[in-house]
Length: 118
Length: 110
Image 1: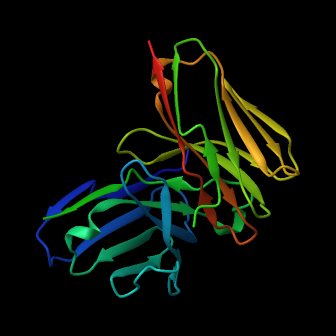
Image 2: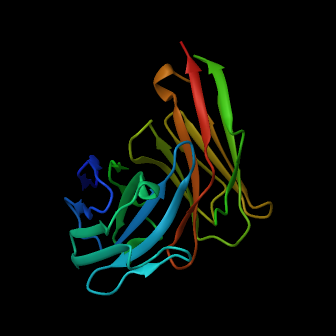
């Protein structure tokens, strides 16, 4: 089955640091990647939709200058949390799909990144 | 905002029993998907059911979809301790956007 690799799995850093999270599709072309945020015992909240070669579309309430998304190739999207603060601590999950067949195929999820800002 | 509402929020059963989780949604959908999440991990896709389908099976899983009632259910038969996880329904609209329900935490006791 399709595999999505997300790295790193865990990050602990000081307040003010910028953190980059990578999401790679390993065996298929991901025309679209999605970034989610999940708080403990809660559901996934979509942050932004990333299409290869174009600007990301952010959900209402998500600061685009805070959460920089780049989708430079069909296999890689990155999320950079800029100048992270303790309130940015969360579980971030990416997913990928080939939008040309989204109606028939599920999204494939990475294993998530646990971000802890001290 | 989360479109899907799931119930129950938590379900605790004994191994061998069946587990049923329900999901309701508000807007029109292209398809509905069920995912499983083990604690601290990513999501694993279980079943995708299209809006023109009413029922789908995969191993011990059975999913139903009632578009007139805007609801879906996931049945896990003969549950095992390894089925312990959170289960989420997610609706997909005509633009491909996935919206997750609040999830059901399933605990299967050996």
